[in-house]
Image (cartoon, rainbow, N blue to C red; front, side):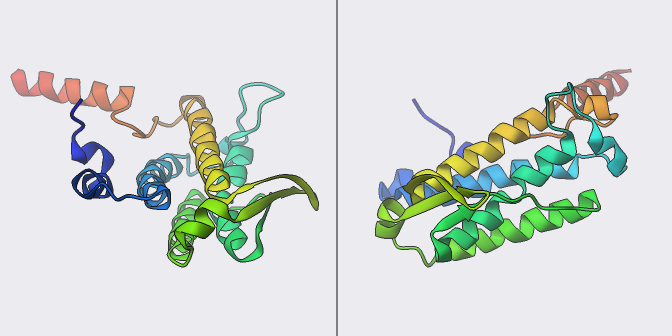
Amino acid sequence: VAFPDALFGPKFADFRKNKMMTNKDFFIAQWTDEMKSTLSAIKGLPTDMSKLEYKPSAKARSAMQLVQHFLSHPDSMYHSIATGAIEEKDARFDSAAAMADYFNDKSALLLDGLKGVSDADWMERNIDFMHGGHKVFTLPMYQMFWKFMFDIIHHRGQLSTYYRAMGVRNPSIYGPSAEDIEDMMAARMAANN
C-alpha cells in the first residue's frame, strides 16, 4: 500500500526514506499534525462564551468543561518531563482566542521540552498520573504521552458533535465539514450558471 507523504507530513516522508524514526520522533510528528486539527477545532468555537455552557445531556460535560479539561494536557505533559508526574488540572479561559493562544503556546513548549528527552528516557522513564494528590497509575513516558494525545483527540471528537447545537459551523478537522461541502457545491453550481 502506498501512502501519500502529504497525508502524514514531512516527518513520515523522512521515516520512509531513512527507516530510522524513533517512537519519540513519530510521537512528535503525530502531535504536530494532530494539534493543527485541535487548533482548528478551538478556533471554530463560538465567540459568545455563554454558548460553551451547552451540553447534550445532564450527565455530559459542557463544551467549556471539555475544553478546560483537554487544553491543559500539553502543559501537564510538559511539567511532567521535569517532575515525573502529571497532576490533572483544568485551565480557565475568558475567550476563544485565549484558548487558541494558550493551546498553541503550551503545545510549542511541550515540543521544545521533548527535545531534551533522550530516547531511553522516553521509553523507560516512568510518569505518575495524579488526581487530587493521589497516584492513580504509572506508565512509561511514551505510553503516558500517547495516552494524553489520544485523550485530546477523543475529547476533540466529542466536542465536534456540539458545534451545530451551539449555533456555529463545524470546523474542518480531518477534511471539509458538511458546511464546507455545501459551500463548494454552491460555488460550483454558481460557476456553471
